[in-house]
Image (cartoon, rainbow, N blue to C red; front, side, top):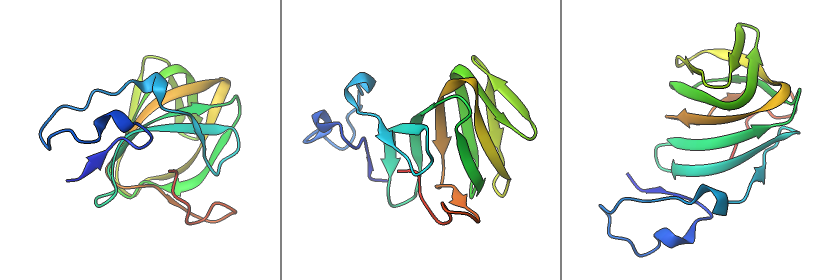
Length: 134
């Protein structure tokens, strides 16, 4: 595994087995292809597709229809995250099995979430078909 924290230069030159402490505030928010959703990649392994990222959702912003290629886990830090199956409020967690598909929206106050992916989502149909959130 060759994991990195993109946009965080302090890890350069560390020994392979050294812990990677990440100052999250120093990583800039990046726009995603979905309007109103920004992200910070905390860890990624481009070879396997594994990624941990924070996402900031504006109220009502929408992550278009997508499939979770592998297990996806999300912890809501602030606000709420909504889909057709229910709402995840701040302090709560949801995980979705490989093969699950859905749209998702930021709640009325938006959301700040921490998500872990074993593989990137696959977007289906619409203008974001085939994109990767990275």
